[in-house]
Every structure is written in structure tokens, then in C-alpha cells.
Amino acid sequence: MQHPSLRHVAAFCGQCSCGCPELYVDDAAAPERRIVITDDFGQRIQMSVEQLADLVGDVRRGVLDEVVAAVG
Image (cartoon, rainbow, N blue to C red):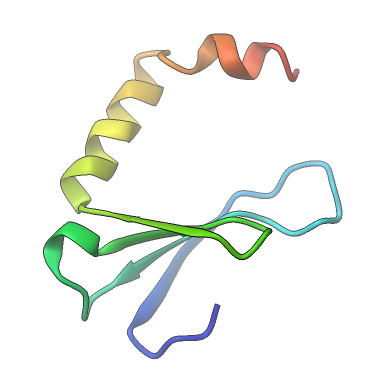
């Protein structure tokens, strides 16, 4: 993803060769759209930093454990 205002933060690579979802911060975006997550199919979602913090908190509390347990 090439855009001058996007700052790459992380790539979330799995066990395939199909590409990786990635997380960016768009410093030029409105606050409610500052976080950008792309997938390996060219789709993207945008959210606020606060929404990302809620998501991270839920993951840390185990909200998604049942979903990922089916994979691993």
C-alpha cells in the first residue's frame, strides 16, 4: 500500500504465501479514520485509535481465543 501519509506499523503474516494483512497509521486522516488495516485481497478498514485500543484490549482479555483455537 503506497500512500505518503501512511506509516507502516506491522505485518501479520501467517503460514501461507498469499500476502499479509498490515496495519498503518494515517497521520493525515480524520481521527475516526486514522488506523488503517489492509488485507491480502486489497480490502481495508479504517478506525480510530480508540477503536483499535478497544480491539487490542478485547484480544488481551481472550475474546478471540475460541476463534483462533480452531485454527491452531
